[in-house]
Amino acid sequence: MLRNKCVVCGNSYDKSFTITMGGMSYEFDSFECAIHKLAPECSNCQMRIIGHGVESDGRIFCGAHCARVKGSVDLTDRVDHIGIAQDH
Ligand SMILES: [Zn+2]
Ligand SMILES: [Zn+2]
Image 1 (cartoon, protein in one colour):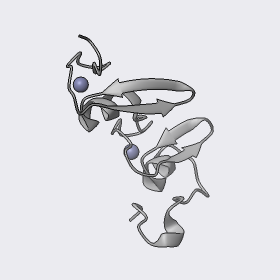
Image 2 (cartoon, rainbow, N blue to C red; image 1 turned 180 degrees about the vertical axis):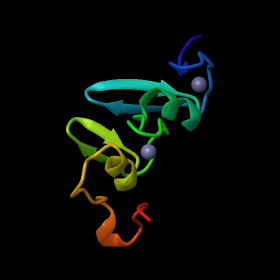
Image 3 (cartoon, helix red, strand yellow; image 1 turned 90 degrees about the horizontal axis):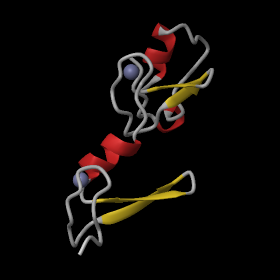
Image 4 (cartoon, rainbow, N blue to C red; image 1 turned 180 degrees about the horizontal axis):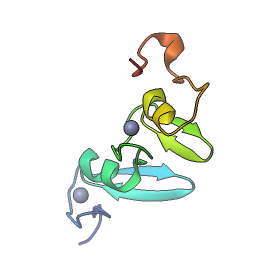
């Protein structure tokens, strides 16, 4: 029985869940595996982006700070307006 098999680690788990992204569905047994598979990497610090990232010139960053480090000026976090910006 290979139902509910995690696409990352191969673990079969009855409480697994499915995430659909870009028209593809993936089965995971944990959020750790889901993040490993689907979360984009910051183009500056390589951190997995699990919150609101920022995109610039086709690259994605964990926050406006990293985007700025890579030369993308005039960029602010999308979450600025609700007051939880990561930029310091
Ligand atoms: Zn897994
Ligand atoms: Zn970063």
